[in-house]
Length: 233
Ligand SMILES: *Cc1c(COP(=O)(O)O)cnc(C)c1O
Image (cartoon, rainbow, N blue to C red; front, side):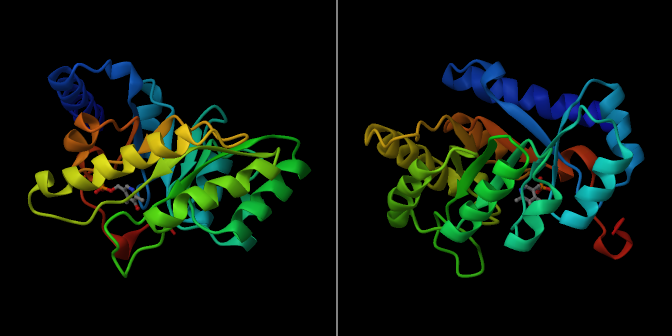
């Protein structure tokens, strides 16, 4: 049952919090529902879950159209500038912002819809070639560019750690992202006061929580393995 697996993930988050003296209420569990059918989302919705994560714009649009309007949709995947307009009026948070041009587009769309769109900077902490995201050393300068805007709000940092057999191997990655956020906050940049750390997935969310994650993005542990050949797209 999906709701039981969801509870099990919640329980593991709470246990990780307990190990390091954190309040479990500081950690939002985003249920990553990409490729999964709307019935699965509704099972969790009826159970009280509201935070869902999606990677693909077309799939997100369809699900947003079909499903209850109080769902908080997190766009966690790489986002192209020309797709921002499809989600700008309702998206709860855009997790993977990594270029000034994308920020400018989000600002424009936020202005159009008269809302402030919360975003996170995606940081490629481990320096993986195959991944999007800004380099840690470029993050402060990028964060400074947000000062000029009023319809896009920088709330924090996000990373997707490498796939590793042993989640302990990602501890240094999570620690570095947290430290980066603390360091940039100390610079007192106008309009920049970050509080969200979106890090931790099925394989490593407990280590991420121990290292300060405030948002874990968990798919497989809740919905089961994904089969991209029969995806809902
Ligand atoms: C798919 C995805 C997740 C969830 O991954 P699982 O390993 O299934 O928990 C989290 N974050 C991003 C950016 C993803 O693309």
